[in-house]
Image (cartoon, rainbow over all chains, first blue to last red; front, side, top):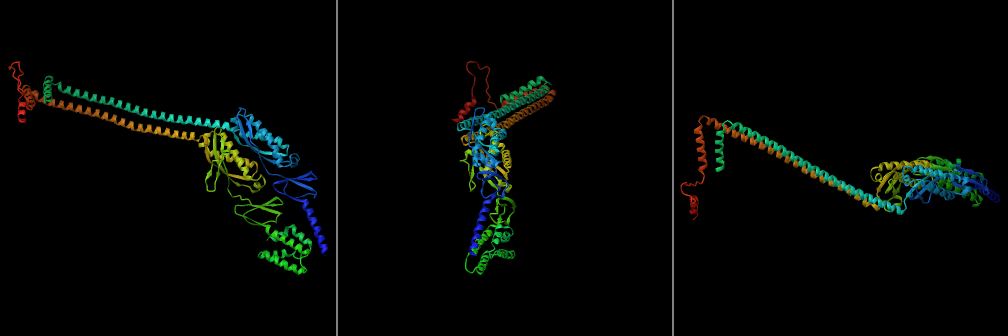
Length: 263
Length: 372
């Protein structure tokens, strides 16, 4: 009885051990290559519980979109400006077997991929001027780099999903020059604005002075006219009255003059 | 109940039954039946099992005993791993042997015990934020100073601008989020966000970034991030891109401030001039009106005086016509009388000779006397 139990336990244990060697789980995020004595025999892409012979072993590779940070690369544009470009890429393993044979795993792929991406960066951006690089064409440039680097990537069993320029910086010396330029530009602008203010001020004041002068002159003109009109009317009134008897007017007016003058 | 569940599908249990020696192999079934009524108590179960064991193997723990302990451990394991809860805002993503099988909503759920099924519960409602160019602190303040390499960007007109912004994102699709992109997923969002912002800033002149086009920039950047993430099938939905700060770089900020000061100066000059103008023009207008009014007044008065004098003359003349000589003499005499009345009169005799001034100042003498 006891011996029987022990034997059955051992058998059970062996069976379980064998079973554990012939079963493995493949998560959603992975793909698998089954190796028999080091030779790949098949690949598994669909996740779930998978079976294999107990003497085969399994290499798991990532099936997700993977990060690749490309080290900063100094690029000279076609107008001889230097630029430090920091790019990153996203890639996916499309052919696990090829990848395994060429570079063994994801990190191998990263090491190898950075080189074609950097050379594509240098090549593609080197043909462009600095301003194009900043312009709206940036998107299509990144696409060109991706397409170019993808030729090398496919050879590794990898597809580049995206290559993007994260940063495109000027080297320190150049950015200092930009700062100086920005500063002088702003100084110019400030001077211009102040001068404009002064200009406007003078214009408005002159306009006001002009208005005043013109207004006063017109008023002078009009008032003289009015005065003259008054005088003329008075002259006419006197003349009409005094013409009736010039001799008596002379006498009468002298009397008035005496009154005024001798008092 | 978990135990029931296990009996239905778990491969482990069939193994136990195959052993044939297990006296309580039916135990979980029995208690499972009870469980549907009220829920089995684990301690109770263990105690009962032990009692049965004692009855079955009176000599103590033998081969069956080892089986029993293993079974017991397995049972505990199953009890602990056959269920999970999904909190509000989370989704339960169930994997069977690593393969995605289903997604469950909020609440208590059963699953096959680990390692057959595993549950992941990502929070799909939480708003995640990624700061670029600064870091927000817990207390709400923000630190802008130490992230220049993230925040300094080239603009389209070859200037440099200091940009700090935040990306708010949520998990849009839990399966895609978990299975399609490499962890940490935030890194992908951040890389793409930085790249997108530089791309957009690089297309525009610095003035846009500093003033007018901030809204447009936010929208464009959000679009680019979302497009890129969709390209990766990342299951991430970008809710908002918020520009926290766009300033000129530290090195030149004084010059930019001076431009603003200059603008204020310009406004001030113009306002001063306008004030001057507002002061001078109405005064001049008043003065002009005054001059005209004075002229009118002069005219009116001159005419009126003339008319008055003429009228007077006419009236006098009307009378004079009738008795010319008499009136003439009368007017002369009256005038002389009137004039001479209040005058100092000095009478000089024409025949007094020419040697001495024939003058005796009587009034002066009288005045001198009264003074003494």
